Length: 163
Image (tube, rainbow, N blue to C red):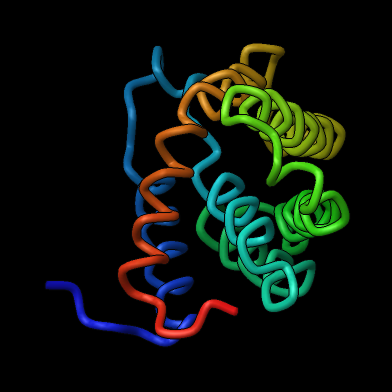
C-alpha cells in the first residue's frame, strides 16, 4: 500500500522521476524521439491542480532542467513557464477534452516548447538542432494518455488533499 503524502511531496516525486527519465542516456538514433518528460509532468500538474501549480513552479523546474542540461540559465525555465501559463490559462477547456484530443493539445504545447528550445540553442550556437529535434513532441503526444493515467492514479493514491 502506498502511504499518503501531502501534495508537494507527490508533485516532487513525479517531477524527480521526470527529471531522471530526462537524464537517462539514449543512443543517438533515438535521441530526437525522446519525450519531453518534464514538460508532460508540468502540464499534468498544471491541469490537475492549477490553483497550486503554475508558472512559478514550472519556471523553478525549468531552472533545474537548465542545470541538468548545462544550458543557459533560464532557457528551459522560460519555455516551461510559458507551457505552464498556457496549461493554467486553458485548464478548464483542456480537462474536458477526451484523451485523444488532449494528446493533440499537449503535443502542440510540447512542440512549441521544443521549438523554442531549438531556436535558442541554434541562435546562441551552443548546440545545433535540426527539425528532427521536434520529433519529441510526437512521442510526447503519443505517451500523453498513459502519462495522464499513471499520474492521475498516483495523485489519487498518494495525495491526502488535492483540492
